Length: 175
Image (cartoon, rainbow, N blue to C red; front, side, top):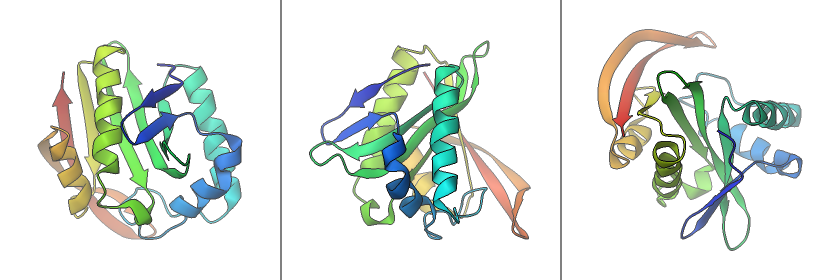
């Protein structure tokens, strides 16, 4: 699953570097960005560094793809997009993404998502991509639907984070 770079009209998707830890922390310590995630907002830059290290390891092991989303003209880190839970025999993986609140509503996920999905189907030869989101996360649901995903299910009381129980909406996209 190793990939080094994907370019779109406005964006560069590439491996997140150690030097991006501060920007990554700024994005994923934001309570609004993390509101619907199944983990709490990051509380220290060490979590960003640890994420970068583990992402690099899983990419080197060909088990996950985690790419930073950068503005092509400035190289500013906007967020991350991932293919994870890769099941080689079944030719499927899950997609996940998160973007700085400053860039919400600007089509960043649509552009980055289309590029990664094209790579997943054409290069990795995946058959299926899945996404699991909190059903209250209307924006992510709309983003997935714009990318062609179909809502396939609703799992009640799937997660508990900091005492808050939430459901999951399951989306799928077939090659």
